[in-house]
Length: 90
Image 1: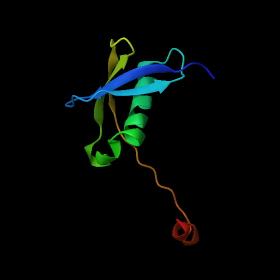
Image 2: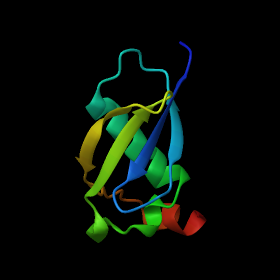
Image 3: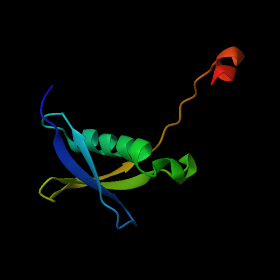
Image 4: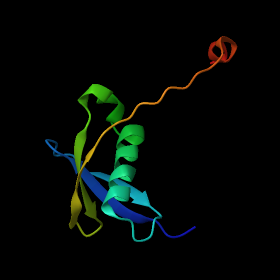
């Protein structure tokens, strides 16, 4: 596994800056934006932004603070079925 590289992102309309890391070498803007959205959803307050509030505009920065670019990220919910027995075990 390669070394991790730090990046940062902000969301349009927010002063907060979030850090995430990736092991992808030569990652392009789309890859980084999707990684940032995953981080925002799972590790920050992304779940507070219900799917109806997406898409969100992300700006990605490298570790030196230089903007890599901006992307609109949309959330595509997925559904997972479980039997009633599996569901009641949770």
